Image (cartoon, rainbow, N blue to C red):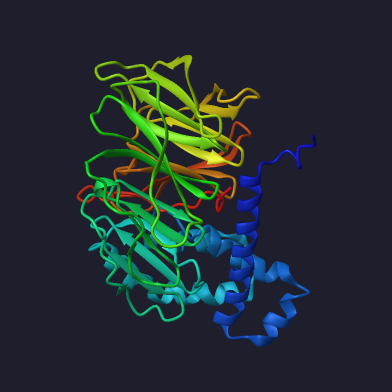
Length: 399
């Protein structure tokens, strides 16, 4: 089987979804710029519109402040070479002082563009409130009144233009791109649980939770069902009494990184959602640091706070994966809260400034990291007095 034909149906669906998103962005870009001739010309010179659409698509879901959005736009070569992009930059420059003054009062949990409107940016704050900025008007942040439906947020993901939030007792809420209010999708369970992860995989949400802190269960919920639906338990993990550090997936394979309380080594367990088979790996990672994960295409990476990075790839036999040490990205220990790949660069988000500055801005940039990434960008994603809860990050936007 060829490499192209061997791609999973899940990957194909995401590729198709990404293509539709870019097409919508291109159309909205022309409409928002108010130039019908430009829209007509873009049929033959699509690369001009694509430079703007691609740029703003990349800026949709960054865990950064408005100041970082400005820097992302101003440094993009596609903007500098496109007249329409430069016009937007002039508006950003004109109102940048308003953005800077406002971010002193409200720091971002996640910054992303409303999926159906190219002209809008939504800022999700750590207290669960939502603010909107119109890229055409640039008057000020507008409160949307989208307060979090629960004070116990246990999971937050983006899938197919919707935001899904999991609260207490397995309650699932959805915020669609066409309605600016939360709707309840599931009924509450009869017992409280602690959710350690919620991931969109295929057309389903997968949740891992524990009731007693000892045993961990997996459940799925179909996103294709109309109206109310319910979580269906699909299996249990082999490991017990563990502190879950991070969970990622490669297709139907879940990879769980965990640590026994009081121990330093990180253990790994794999679970295959199709085979419903679990297997702990013999490999252990010797570090006392916490760990986060991020993805690129059909592979994933694990990154510790002291800069050690491992590559995760799927093996032929389910549910096994290969976890191999790749390289050390930095010396010392940084308070890493997340990472993602943006236009070939690895962006590492830290919860306090590496350089000592308190602004939400770039604090370090290192080029060409071992021919794996084009560079590493450290970005302060949180003010010391707040702390973001979750970030809404699509699975296929940044790769």
